[in-house]
Amino acid sequence: MDDIKDALTIFKKDILQEWRSKAVTVATVFFASIVLMVLAFALGSNDTVLKIAAAGVLWVALAFAGIISAAQSYQNELEENALEQLLLYPIARSSIFLGKLMANWLYMALLGFLLVPVTSILFKAPLANNWWIILLVILLGTLGFSIISSFYAALTANLRARESLLPVLMFPIVIPILQAAVKASQELMGDNNPAFIWAWIQRLVGFDLVYFVVTLVVFHFIMEE
Amino acid sequence: MKAAIELEHLSRRYGRQFIFSDVNLVVSPNKIIVLKGNNGAGKTTFLKVLSTRLRPTSGNAKIFGFDLKKEAFEIRKLTAYLSVFGGNYQNLSAFENLKFALRLSKVDFTDDKLLARLEHVGLIDVKDKMVREFSSGMKKRLSIAKLLSVDAKLWLLDEPFAALDSAGKKLVDNLIIRAKEEQRTVIIASHDLQRSSQFADTILTIEDASLKLEKNLNHG
Image (cartoon, rainbow over all chains, first blue to last red; front, side, top):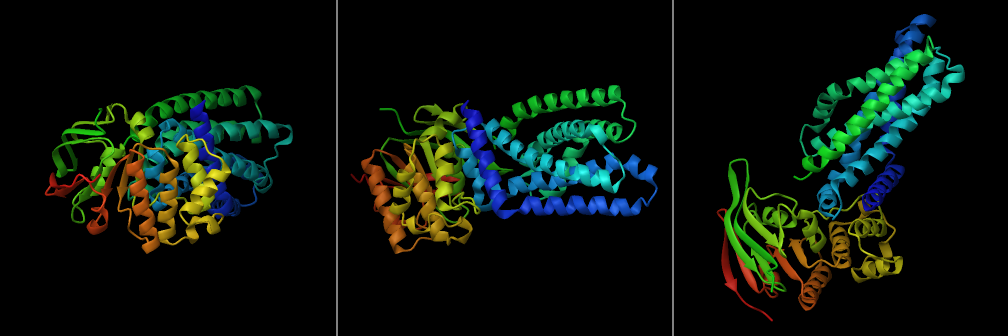
């Protein structure tokens, strides 16, 4: 129970800092908007092509924005050596991971909720009655992505080449999550086959669970020094 | 009485270079130890090892009977580390920084108690100001407020006088005197030897990767 309380304290601190600095919000919203706009222009006016590309474009924008968000979440800790102080509190390492994960997930999920209607309009991929299922896919996909990005952001936080190492290390691991999220979103924006949609959602849940348990256990060891 | 610090053949290296090696030391509770050494001699690394932030490369260490490698969590409950950088968050106010630190330190507090601490260190008028607007001296005062609020048995102070004006230095002087009265064990790494040695029971020097006894003063 104490660990959850500590995680919430770290989460609230991160949200308050972001509320004041807007560093992640500005960077991710701008970046994601540019990705959507550029690809919408590049793909032209063929409705079929746009519709096929919609889910992929949505997740490309979200994935790159997610990297920015994760890297920034530890950037705040590096100023004034706050990370060192954080590691000296009598708290479980998993609380730090959970706090960071919750903050990253919130940013990514909110960005996803914002991008879904924009993508739907720009790429002519109507969601009709499926809007709540795509929100569920966004929640599960961004959760899986945030688990991996928060873990690797901590791992690379003290390295000089952290900006370049973070995507290199995490993208191979996060591919199964992205694949399931893209496939589920593509079905929702296209053929709309419920059997396929729920099969991909089940995979997302499975990956999220496995990644969550593994990273939570390993995090303690990577943060010991 | 259980020793505050017991080190047996303790070593720490970065890569192939030993920062300190084969350190043997026993510190009784309620002692004030001053650690001196040139820049880069390894004072900060030594304090970081004692604080559990860095793991020793070899050897054994106990802090109040707890094993440094196996019982780091217990040691963190008993230790407070005042770092050179302070570890404050730029986009939080002084009050919010202090509140955050005490929550994670598992200290019971009230807002009045926090305000009293900030008053003590001379930050009450800027309690709602963001730390990014603070001078280095003000940041150090905020770190001192955190240190004061946590009831730690071992204080590890890395350059506690740095960045402070004369009033701030006097504040640290009083803090150390009070720590002695409150039966705390204090290790001070400082270049301001004239100032810090007035409180010291023992002065140690880190030089050429070894820890040597410079002087045993046995104040108080």
